Amino acid sequence: MNPVNDTLKPEERVLYALRGLYQRYGYSQFKMSKFEEYDLYTGNKDFLVSDGVITFTDTDGRLMALKPDVTLSIIKNSRLMPGSVQKLYYNENVYRISGSTRCFKEIMQTGLECIGDLDLYNLCEVISLAAESLKSIDPNYVLDLSHMGVVSALVDVLGLDDERRAAVIACIGEKNGDGVRRLCPDKDVSGILALIAAHGKAETVIEKLRPWCVSAEAKAALEELSLVTGVLAANWCDGVRVDFSIVNDMNYYNGIVFMGYIRGIPTGVLSGGQYDKLMARMGRNCKAVGFAIYMDQLERLNDEPRPYDVDTLVLYDDCADIAALTRAIAALAREGTSVRAQRTIDEKLRYRRLLRFGEGGIEYGE
Amino acid sequence: MANSLINVALPKGRLGEKVYGMFASAGYECPAILEPNRKLIFENEATGVRYFWVKPSDVAIYVERGAADIGVAGKDILLEYAPDIYELLDLNVGRCRMAVAAKKAFRDNPERTLRVATKFTHIAREYYAGLGRDIDIIHLNGSIEIAPILGLSDVIVDIVETGKTLLENDLEPIETIVLISARLIANKASFKFHSDQIEAICKGLARQVKE
Image (cartoon, rainbow over all chains, first blue to last red; front, side, top):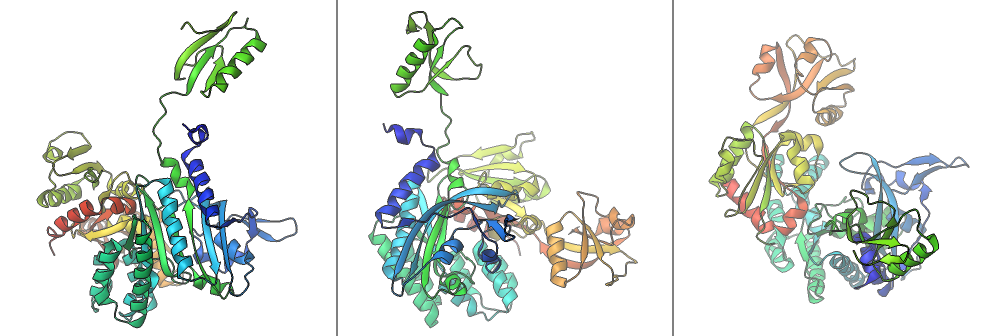
């Protein structure tokens, strides 16, 4: 029994494990203030998961925002030397509009970012850390990988205007083959339908898609995906799958993007990818890859109700010697179980054993 | 867990019964569902499915939040609430259209803000934003047809099946926004962990779809 682990809530236990994991791989913690100048978000609004930002005017008249995102702050503060790589992790609260309620919510987010002169190793390391992170939350996980290069190349073949192109990409995200057919009655959409149907173990999916990836860009993208999934498979990342329904915003993301799921949690808990295009938009001439884990989702993990609220309930009366009672309760608490002292029994309190505190101290006779 | 039951949210009513018929023909029958009683949940371990009846507009919520692994919802609901789900198949039943309707004598005056009464505020807003038209949205929960008659709105945006209700109220459809039919939807996380079962159901249903 590990008393620390037993006391922690699932999300706290995960946080503790993840911090250790990221530090072991040489990532250092990035700590920042709760506020950021609003200007940072205006130019990159679409990068944010939700469109609302809580703003306020600071005492000096500057328009500030409660952080809706961490990645943009990390990029803004990055000081990169040519050829160097920065490895950072964070654990911060962000403030976003929650999808279903349309109200602002404080969300705890943990994640890591690797930016700079990245190579294939860095990419594989970040994705395998994403898989490891999911595994440390629950061994029943799936990490879906997609490649924006493959999706983009197969959609390009159709030669659509911007509006229809965006609609087709949205349909790929919904696995909505009927929608693609309806949008492009005049085109051969078999490549897109193959893309939607292809999901599962990397080696099978990649082979199925090979005949459709004929352009140089598509071939290169598929090859990169194949290389990365090969490395991950050789490193026991057994929950890794390929699924092209992850279609992050192409103005920011390029290359490999991924999404992680845990059995029993109805939405994705981890989201990430390569965002070299965002780096370029923010005037940084380098590559970047990272991911975030939405810790608020983890509350639903292992939420089996506890059979008892407290191990021991000690009842005392008005005549009790308070000094002796305090000593007795402290002694019980030191045994490692929970103890609660009160004068009456709450109707709804569930306890494992009931003891009374009398003139001679704790009475174990009950 | 590989063979756990797949939870299916079906829309209460005529459409739901029709859709259940498709599930049954695809090999996922659950005869208890047809018994006349007020039960809402039915399961058949042999076929691996658990059905439950919910309000049609709630199906997407059950699926998005994972209480149901899959479900059947109208495209109108999916467009209006934009849930984060997979839309796996067009079942081609419950066909109707989302349309703009107005009094027969209505003449649009583009110099004025158009007053639009609807249950589907998101769809209406998107449609008119696409046309660049300034509108005043009036959200109603039912009996939309009387809004133009009483002068509450200039037009309505609503589902039109046969057009009979419109006709009886001296209204006519003037524009089709989008065609609607029932869709098979799936929770994204459930799809990851039950993809074989969900895909088998999807394939079975695809064989029942009539063009």
